[in-house]
Image (cartoon, rainbow, N blue to C red):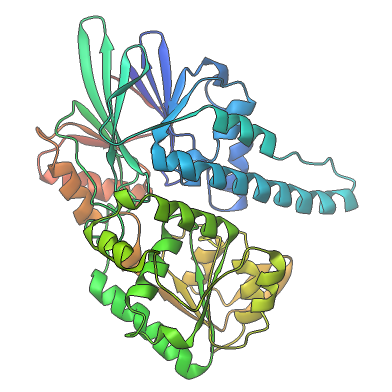
Length: 461
C-alpha cells in the first residue's frame, strides 16, 4: 500500500494525490493549479503518472482546484469511474463546462496576439467534448454510504461543511491480510457557518491527509465580520457608489445572498438593486436549493418559511452578456456579485473597468486570494492594475471579510482532528508553506505526529 502526493503539496491549489493498493491505482482529486500565469501554465504539463493506468478517481468536492483537470485526465486516457457525493455530481457539470468555456476564451485571446507576431498557436487544455465524456464517468453517492471503488479500496463520504456536496473521504484499504484506514479531509468548512452542516470527523483512522489552508491563523469573529459587511452597504449607500463582490460561483455566492436576505432590513438592502451577474452562480444557486435536505437547521427553517432562498425581491439574475453590460450604466445603488472569485477572469473584470477608478465604489472580498491573482494584488494595495491590456487606477475602497471564508481556520481544523480517535499521524497538504508548518507545530503540541507533504513524496502505508 502506497500513497503519493502530486498536487497541493507545498501550496494551496491543484489537489491531486495517488493511492496504490495491490495492483489498483486510485486518484484522490485532480484539480487545476491556480494563481499567476506561471503557475497556471503548469496545468498543461504531463501528469507524473500515466492517465490510462488510473483505475478510479475519488473526488472530494466540485471546486475547480480539486476537479478542474479531470477532463484533461480523460483526454489523456483515463477511462475509469469518478466517485463523488451526489450534490457534487450535480455541481461538477456546470463548473467544468464553465472552465472549458473560460479556457477556450483564454486561448482565443492569446492566439490573436500570437497571430500578430506569427507565433505558433496554442490549444486549450480541453474542450467541451472532453467535459461531456468526463461527466459520463461520474458516479454519485450518499453521505455515510460505504461503496467499493476498486477491489481492495472502499470509500465512505462524510459531510465536510465546505460547499454543498463537499466530502471528507474515509478510505478502507485491504491487501492480503492487511487492513488500513485512511482519511482525506478534502477542504473543511467552518463550524456554525450558514446553510451547511458542520464538518464531520470520521471516528478513527490509521493515517490522515489534511488540508492546512488557514493552519496559521484564526478567522475574525463571524458576528464582527457580518457587522463589518453590513457597514459597507450602509457607507456605500451614503457615498452614492456601487458595491462589487467578486465571488466564487459555488458556495460563496449562495452565502452572500443568504446574508443579504437574512439582514435585509438591518442593512437597508431593500433600497439597492442586487445582481447575481454569473450564469454559473445562478445555476449553482438553483442546485443548492434543490439539496435542502443537506442544509443546517436554520437554513431549513428559512427555506420552509420562504420556499426559496433567499427571499430578495430586488434580486436580478443576469445570464446574458447584454444584461451584464446594462449594469455598467448604473453609477450608484447596485450590489454586483460576479465571478471570478479570484478576479482572474469573468464578468467582475468588466465591472472593475467601469468602477475601480471611482472613489465611491466599494469592493468586498469574501474569499481567499492566492498569490499572483489580481484579487491578491488589489488586497495588497496595488495602486494600478491591468485589465485586458488597459491600465486602471485603483481608487475604490476595498474590504476583506475574513470571517466568511469557506475554509475552517486553525481552531476549526484542530477541532475536526480532535474528533478522530487515537491521534493518527497527519500529512499536511493544501496550504502555503508557512501555514502548513505552523499547523504542524500546533499538532505536535497536542501530541500528534505530523509532517508537511512534499511534491512527489511516497508514503508506505
